[in-house]
Length: 335
Image: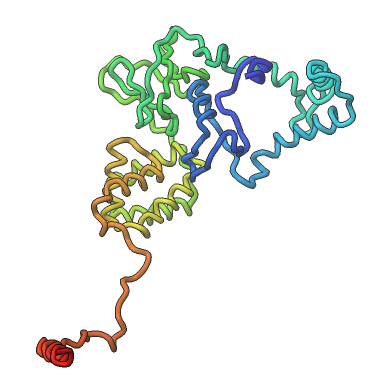
């Protein structure tokens, strides 16, 4: 919160290193946060980009900045108190890193930030102000369209997210601009349609799936017996967990090794009906639906069988008269 106050707002997405204070498990993309951090996310509502384990590429930029301040400013400086230390550091940055031309971008950081600062989202009192606009916000549907005055307007594939809302801004030339309700990012612009029931705009494709991913998708389609719900389920999975999409597919593929196909397909229908799009939710639904069906779960061990030489054999069965004779003999001996 002090960082947000210092910079004058927050960004839409914040990058974090994996830390036990923040995350319990990466969980193949279904990230499990600590209770405290999850409560904070629920209040602040920003997106989290969690660096993957042992991935220097994603966190190298941050680590380099820390090293720059650590060795350039703090290493040989005498500490008096935190306030003077912070003031001296800000003044040092104004003279050095923020005021000098960057070697790669050839831009001055202080000038770039001055332009970018206007896009930061305010966060007063542990919340944020919706971007100022007199328009009514509209919900983005799962098929990436927005219902507006009886018509459907397309936005780019992947725009949808739970709770995503947009503004429909109509200008003097009778054009409607669709912008993000929080960041004001422009998603699309169309002439206003005065008919009813029309689909406005062409499909925006952002298909960045590699050939290998498509092969896995094809294999999963076959495992699901070409069920009609597989395509929509995987598409939602790709949109919502693009960074972990391959991991999610591998988890789903492994389910067919542990469960029979009917149980997995039944779980797919259960998740689709309830709009649960993740491999973890699919696995949980299979377990839930199959609790009373033991045969659905494939055992890891083959059924134990007796060797052939012991087949078709049984214990020796004695005649009851043998026991009666033995008892009579014992009675006469004691009598």
